[in-house]
Image (tube, rainbow, N blue to C red; front, side, top):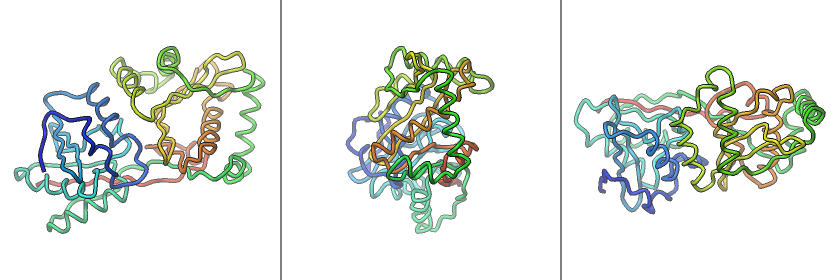
Length: 305
């Protein structure tokens, strides 16, 4: 096992199977390199532990040893490879006494594996649920999905789709480009009220532009009857799922419910592409429950060497 302070983002071990299923791009080099390029600092370096059967990217912050990717931007964490969890524990046990560690956003499979190796070493850790991701298990057809969410919600979605058509014409979902459509996505954010209106800083814009270049990233744009963008979603796709990372809509068109109309079309699209999951990622907002999503617990493991 070697520790390499200059990260090899092209190492083949980044493609090893993660210790939890369906965790999207968040444990892979493309996403983490984009995150590090935008937000990394020399004062809080990365330390990637790697061998032929595992890889664990540690982030040495000022207050703790963490997994690379800050939790507000990184929805899942998980060691890579059959030896990844053991490598994580071995790394912590090699640190000086008194060193704190915090590993967040772990799906249950990943957390259980790590805890098992700590237990084997006789080390007690604090392992508790700290958040949820919300996932929709996709049926084989969109009609079956509409049946599954119940009469009231099905009626509401159809009502909003009709309202959109009356106000703006037939909705069309298109694949967006990295130039004009991405700029429209940023503009929708800046026009929003509350915290959303201040989210898209220049630094985060640069981050999203870098993310557009990674495998599986996609920008979907909802257009009105004349082709003008009224909403956009930034997400990722892989063999397991569509991951809804971020979305925004034109507040001047809010009376047409472009956000819900876009979500319903994205779900229909994911079903058509035979995805297993539509993953709304972190956060337990009410609309996710209404659309049929269920909680996926996320765990935080913490302790002091």
